[in-house]
Image (cartoon, rainbow, N blue to C red; front, side, top):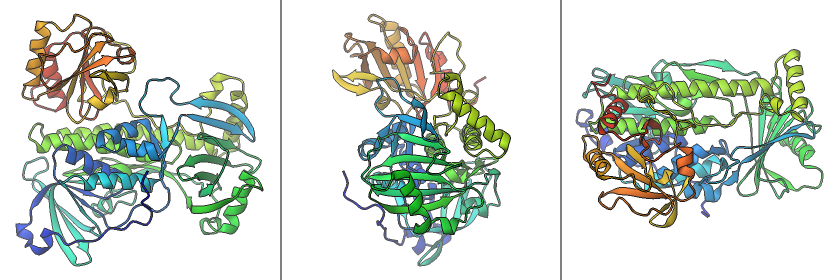
Length: 571
């Protein structure tokens, strides 16, 4: 465990080469990322791991103040694993799968977000945002092709050249303690938050809905008997006619959200005189506690119409904003980051046309709409705006005590799950019969496997490159399949290969170099992927399924790869 106080860290401003060179001689960097928050850092790390040089600029010189985003989903943990800092996140975070919903003081129902065994990561961890930023920053600092520039504020932006052409670029004007300088990049990723200066200086906006309610966040340090679960109260006796959410964080800190109503005075509600009695009413008279951080927020569901504008791509809160119910903000931002990173790497590496980046926009716009839709439904249920809506909500909660059908209607915040990109132009539709959730467009699920006889996990072998996964039977890796796999390994777009064998088969791919052979130790990999002997999956660098077949065919795989890279000539 780290003893670093990430809340008090600050970083030095340093002059860079461009400040000592004439603007005409300035280098054109492959990618500039604006904003060193969690999503900007994740984007920069992902790009760097793909071999892309990145300049990361931020107008501040410190990490997040207060806990802010705290709930990080299993999908985000899978992404953190691929970025090289998953263990640190999970070791420090509070893992949880179970939530409870109360009406007044009576338990309505309990839910488990990960009821089955055989997963490497929990459904969620709770971890203060400053830890997440700190761990990501330390990973970024360890990568030599990331240049982090603090106290570097973007105050101007100009695009050059025909969008999509190899000579197109973006010049940012960067304000520093030493004055301004021009910074030129082929692409810019704007990860500069909900107020996005980049978006504003381009004359763009976000549209949607602002909810007329206010919530108080109180981070409370205490020794408490509450379990590591998500507890949500509707109309509790200690805070009548409103709602309350309780979460545990590391360091004996508990997050409490109190609904206040639209007429609440934000400045007044943050004072100790108002906060302490609310916390005391929840905890009781004998619990010792102290306030660590307090904030009052109003929430919105907004998004930009388009996430790509020329050679500027928007990610995270700069592109879309949701209410906090369901933990969809930061988690969807990390999915933006991994989506845009591999596509930029393919374009910059000459393996895909610039048009591949249009699919970043279309895929993540679709995902943003799904998140906004679910977030809006949660917010409407939690904060009904009419007597009829309130009557319906209370009736649902009362029915949910005894009837399972009503529990699907009770909505204390549908928690974040990754969007299934059903209609992505990069998918190859199924022509064979499959069952289960691993459809083209879905993010891959994990399963326990064995690697060289030692326990391992399937997802650890996927990602960062296009990967082919062949599920073998005991005698299904014949000479013809070996020749096909060798062809795929050495093609114009070489595949990383993973072979999954049944328990007890052993290494049957000794004739294939650079191939990972996994033993399906518990049969869960084949079950979760509905795999029979000979089933072949094509996985994108961001661990999304883009095609699958019952029989391996090199021509089919080649066509699917071209489709997934927007290469011309694919019908």
